[in-house]
Image (cartoon, rainbow, N blue to C red):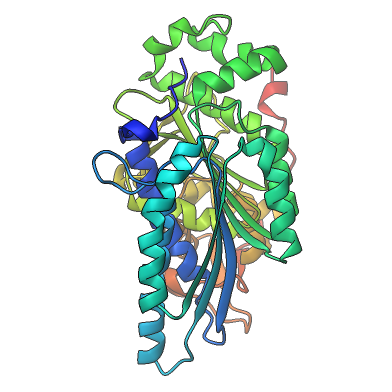
Amino acid sequence: MVAKPYTWKDGATLEEHSRRKHQIIRQYFARYIRVRCQLPQQSKFRFAIVDGFAGGGVYNCGASGSPLIFIEELRAASIELNLRRANEGMSPLDIECVLIFNDFDPGAIEILKQHVAPLLAGIKESEPRLHLEVHYRQQEFESVCAEIREFLQYNRVQSVLFNLDQCGNSRVAHETLTDIIASFSSPEIFYTFAIEALISFLKKTDPNALNARLNPIGVDADSVSNLGLMMNNQAWLGATERLVFEAFERCASYVSPFSIHNPNGWNYWMLHFAKSHRARQEYNDVLHDNASTLAHYGRSGLHMLAYDPQHEGGLYLFDMKGRDSAKSQLHGDIPRLVSEFGDAVSVADFYASIYTATPAHTQDIHGVMIENPDLQVVTARGGDRGAPHTIRPTDTLRLRQQRSFSFSTPPSKRR
């Protein structure tokens, strides 16, 4: 059963899965601003945030909801970045952000306005380099999405972060996600839903794929009553992660299909969609900074879902144990991938290739690139990189010795 919508008028309870999700969003957004504002020559960053299911802004416990999290982190980043620039003798940085908060519940929007107003007043008085323009909508997200997109395109906003936090999956169509990604040069989406809603959707649209994934673990797709018994089962996590990835992989170049690691089971899923491998790289690293907040089941190297569930696969909680497993697999995966290009590949192309399907931390990937005796990282001037933190996208990753190649038969064709 999909969770009931919040009643903000009577006060909303912050559930554990929402707390974990907000922690990821807060830390990722803080890094997002700092990464996008790191150029010394930059004097302005202009972007937009669209919160499609914004809610009332504050929970019963006093914790901030996503709209207030965005405003709080914008203020903190503006202060920090401009202090650092002043200390380093750089020009100040102006951040211009359009925030669009939408919720179908008009009561939620009225409550949200009351919480946002004092924050905006404080920023206007004390932070002259932070310019926020807030718009409110009170519609179903699907109904208002085209209007929001046209508004942002008319105002030539290219960097847009969408937060689509719905308890169910039925209120945002796959086509809408694809359209958002295609409409902007630098878009990202956070997308949260309950797995039962996706299963109900697939029962109608792709029952064969659904049965192929769930039947091997003993779940009858025609009856979701079995799901409560499966939520803490690792086989369930592995099967549904593949199901989620297959359902959404065409929506964006980079899709992170990880489940929120909730004590009550893997019921809620938090996906991150992006056009840029750099966004996926940062997102992976944030997950490792918040070990055990999200969960992955499968391989921990470069091909996270390319495993035989009868013989392989394990729980990956983005913790140190998981990272040790990842490094072990990366020692074989990285040289193998380079050989698929020939004997060398630019680091930029290497990144673009691997971040479609890896949960690994940047430090672990870079560490293996330097430590592995079969690999060499070469600078644009022909020198050798000696330390992982010095690796740049303009470098070349190559095999130290040329290997003969042969084409192998796919596992499904072997007898």
